[in-house]
Length: 68
Image (cartoon, rainbow, N blue to C red; front, top):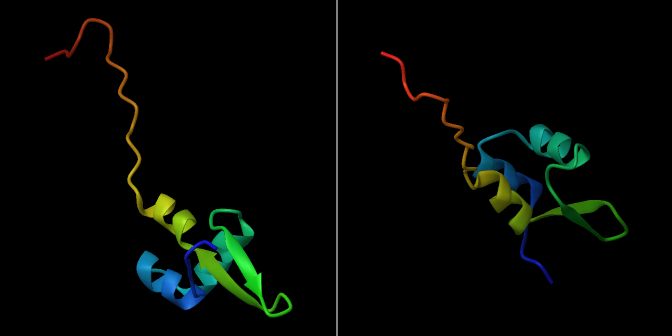
């Protein structure tokens, strides 16, 4: 089973409100599992970590280099 966090704990790690976490879940930005007849959600830690990991921006050098 994957490691999970409560919605409140995920909100705290992201520095956002619980409502924002629920919106992120609905938008597909965070993966969850449901417990107890579908009423309780847990955020899968790996999906949260993906959001917290900085992405490398692609660098495309310009033809001819920098202009001064």
